[in-house]
Length: 513
Image (cartoon, rainbow, N blue to C red):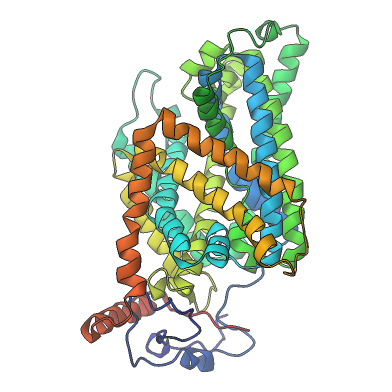
């Protein structure tokens, strides 16, 4: 790329009002009378348009799905299931049902991703099916809460596993050390995602095999443990099982949390080579594999550890390793740290595409819809989410924030899958390369509705706070998007800020084919 004639920062054009934007897309006020984005098109050779490249094949697609699902959840959250149900057999049933629910949901996303081949995932589908306001509210929750809090928590998880060997068991790791290391890792992965998609995806491919190897190791150790006759934990597996619907729904949430991420490849559809084939294939390969590995891993955990030991453990995989590996137990936290690190990288990469598409539709500041003119990555979106994630590291109640929003996020996922039913009704002749049986989205929506309604009874305060966070976005929608006739001084100010960041990031508006 060094020999390429790239435009100077001053030649990078601003987006002008109404240029390739939907009717509501003048949100957050673009500056009037700025130069057209055609200037940047003229500055760059036609052979290398300023747009994100189709660099993801089937292997990379599988790596993205496995990379985000095999984060740290399976190494930590199994105690959330066993704590609620209190029985080994019921716990395994919930893990199986959580996997089946995820597979049903993934089938729906395979249809959505091939009939609406746009990046942005849930945001794109809600926008296409239900319009601007619901899509904006999802984006509001995602950008303000879901994404940065998840990045912060994943960063803190990696940091805790990296630092733990340097502190005695009785010594608590200082919060400042955890936050600093988490911030460094988030910044590094943001830089890597901005600098080279090829390097990032290669790293994720390697980490994917490491993640699978870690879980296969846990499964083999558990099977060997059981083969040695240690099966007493499975005597009367359903004794004293919890039957309260509220607690069962909370247990399902813990299980589903570990499967979360099966829809993340849909955030990057436009960067997939041959998405009509590779998107569904990646989903069909990943989800059955995840379900089988998760159920077998939990079988191993439950064979080695009693329910009481699992509830008392802060990191089940580490406790498991200490019991079966002895002096070699250090292998487990290293593998967990690598796994969580890879999950964080995938989350940063995929969520930045949702931010990018939202800005492209006018639901976020226009500068976030720009692409690096030499790296072809959404650098402004990546940096924006990096800054929000670091802010979340400093929030003492970051875990509480994600608790407030988890029910709302489930509602929006249900809304996304409802789009399958809506399109079947409103657009019966819509091109559908993949068409799932109608019972599949119906079953998913019904189960999601149950998992949303029950917590309203069990945890009304948390649900209310999640709804409040969402509703706060409505004034921003009307001020930023509906109100188009903003004062000239405000539009000029936003235009100057946009130009400044264009120069800083060497970025320009995406050029269409």
